[in-house]
Length: 166
Image (cartoon, rainbow, N blue to C red):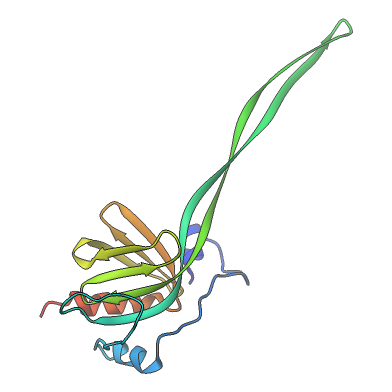
């Protein structure tokens, strides 16, 4: 079941969004065994004592509204004279902007690196994670992020291991 099936109650179609993985197979297997891999990277700056445990491609789905304005007219003919009037009515179209990026999950933060709309959030602010087969919904306080990832359940497992009481 994909994210769009869950959100909109529709059966997945052939245009279901997918993202290819760059996470090494060994790292995935380690996560599935309940252990966090230590991944090297040269793209983000780690803080003292911070270790990167997950790196993968992602698409952030950002809700957008497009507004067009259409004229609605009313008209009638009385004794051969055409009388008409009208008004402008806004027409709203909801869609999701797709923002390509890379997600990094460390033992302290989640980082979404992208040309626009990137974020860096501490795990202490993480409120909820909802995994799907091809996506993960994350909530940080009142801010919500929907990320299309290769495996949403794997991302959820990383968070579960990080937040497991020690």
